[in-house]
Image 1: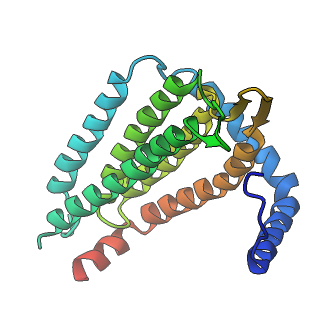
Image 2 (image 1 turned 45 degrees about the horizontal axis):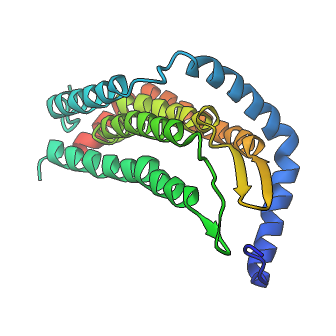
Length: 79
Length: 160
């Protein structure tokens, strides 16, 4: 059987505590999660799913602009 | 060491950390799961969705790592750091939910000569996203704090 072995009593207690907290928060957390999923799912439809090039370009732009802006304005003097 | 050098070094370190945690580790984990055998029998998980999973891991991993570089190379408590940290948290939400699109949340275990098991992990991610919402609220609070106390932060930074 896969992973069927006696758990450490402390780990067992820890998992019980975490499960209790999650069960308690579930009525609040799940609706928030469903709302998050709604707008994330809507926006994800606009992301291209067949071309990695655009994501590589975004990465390069972020790094290059980070280098330029944060060297020019390192934040060690009052402007 | 000059301030800008420290900022660049911090940015580079955190970019490397995020590349490892968002691209390398998931890639290795999914590669291992895909070829998992139990008692000599192949589980054949993610056989059909492997390419899609890999695409979304790399795509969002790159964007998250890029925004991490910008955020962590910015001065501490600066507005641009607050903005990019918030963007990064939101991108993490997209990254998590993109696992759904790639099919990684629908686990189909084909036990050769035995049968098939289907496990849907969407509820687990939904729960996690609900908790993650609290992190978004915290980052918004940080950003508002940086904007309101901008002059004081600059004064403290130049004196410190």
